Amino acid sequence: MADPASVVALVSASLTITIRAAKVGKYLYSLKPKLQKAEKCVQQVSTHVSAIRIAARSLSDWLEDDAVGEEKVEVVKEELLQVLAACGELLSDLESYFSKALAGAEKMRFVGTVSYVWNETVIKETTQTLHQQETALVLILNTLNK
Image 1 (cartoon, rainbow, N blue to C red):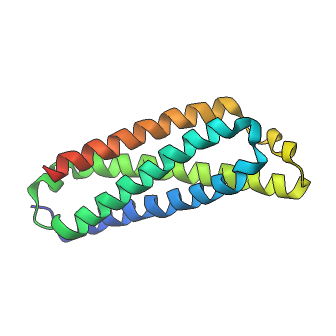
Image 2 (image 1 turned 120 degrees about the vertical axis):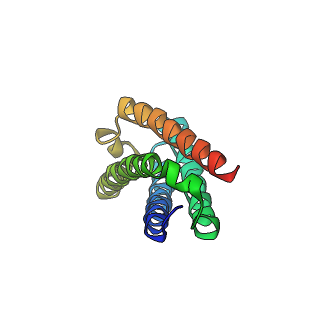
Image 3 (image 1 turned 180 degrees about the vertical axis):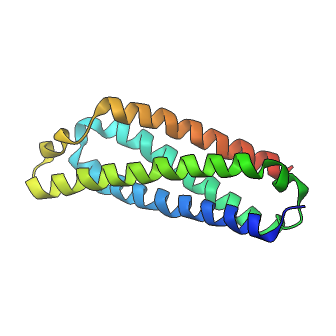
């Protein structure tokens, strides 16, 4: 049986991810016109961040509605907390990264300035990691909804 404190911790972690994903999405939206040569990468990151935000929000809604007393939550609680923590850290790093990129672009006031912060290799690796986190969240959500 899932205790209420466990459910609250999971809901809190899910909501934190939802908020961080929304902030990262906002930064991406602001950066997109300044990074025309990297538009495809920005769109890919944005798509994965949106999917993570939606999955985390759905997970939070499910947990708030149905989880107290659900044995299946207790079974996956530790793994779910690990996935949510990793996802939260990744989004926090992205938030910081894009915040610095946007600040640099606004400070220099022209399109090419952000390239000193924008690292294509880091962004591609991050996109892959985002996809993995997205997949993990969706799989867990699907498992819990059965």
